[in-house]
Length: 345
Image (cartoon, rainbow, N blue to C red; front, side):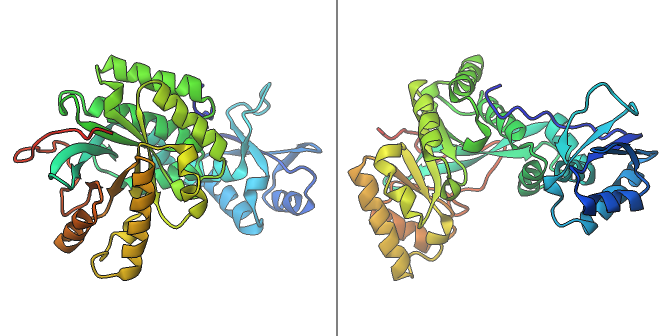
């Protein structure tokens, strides 16, 4: 597997709930209160007749214990199976209480909304950011990713989001228009295999790799910089572009831009809001632009919502803009009245 190999657990409507307390006397006392049976010195188990029963057990344990993520458990249909699928109690808890959302992540239909990104110099469309949506709009994207993170399913969702984004531009965007696609570096365990699979998806939908820009989500929270650099290099090896998303005051990232070598970087929207009125924001934007120009990196200002912001950023020389003032995300974006072109970067 190119992504982290986590298989979502199954919450059976009726079954057995095992816990392995690892000789923690506090947890053992809690299990005794709930009438768990002691199978061995390291294994306690109880049958549940409904998912409501399972939720009661988990709620009580969660309330009594300080941190249930440090303990392991299993949900199984047989009383004593030959082997157990082991998960942290925290993962079991989150899967049980967010079962509907977990089911959407595993089996739901997704579509890609597209938000325009324009060249501020000539107001032409450079591309669109691809934004994952549930097809029936039954859940907000932020909730979807929040639950995916809690249930250790970010890898699965991230993988689906990339394919939906590539598929979503098919027959909608002409060659030369970029697709900006977010990805989470921590979900990729095997960059070579993963990016190869992404390339194969692009070939399947007849999308030019040069039109795909893979954008690092949560740039400010990057921990393993060497792993990130390796991932970005693999994307470039397959002819794709790379970007850093929401760059802010993390100078450890700014100082390493020459090593990371992104094709694009987007500025955190908090520095864009009222930038035409705030001298501190103007100083930050100017410093970012100077660094980027020196390294031949294209700068994208996100979150432009007012004409004053747009006009200032254009005057400053910021290369690209995105935001509600320019256009809202849409399943079927219109490019009428805008000259389609591509920057030479």
